[in-house]
Image 1 (cartoon, rainbow, N blue to C red):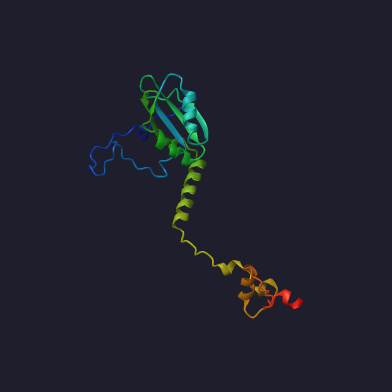
Image 2 (cartoon, rainbow, N blue to C red):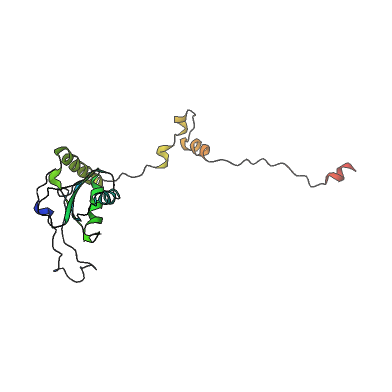
Length: 196
């Protein structure tokens, strides 16, 4: 598999011009990703070239199911004694999580650089990604329905087959158990006095 380097594969410099109150504990590169920039395909740069394919595979699978984890031996512009790995995740959210967690992570003495590779997507994958994002946005902005009232779910007595002047009386009496009030009269005399 041959991959040509693109400008979005290059790691950005840290932002040093942010206001102090907006700056976190660690310096970060400011980059905004749209759905077009994100991809299931990731490139992991700066992996030490000491035979770490199994470790990269284990590390990548922590974030979700992978289809491919492969060493790119013909990738140009690689620093000396480092490798670049290609990882394809099944789900975009897994790739997003992996990029977030693995970028600038220390791995066998080197800081990894992880970048998206949307140029490796097929047209079907791109279509599926964009339609999934479209349906997600539609669901977020869809007006919420009111919750149905309890009466909508319970059959009235006329629907249940019995006739009543007030439809709700039979329904509620069927749902709520009624206590039985069978009171037996108690005599004030003792049973011993009657026998005398």
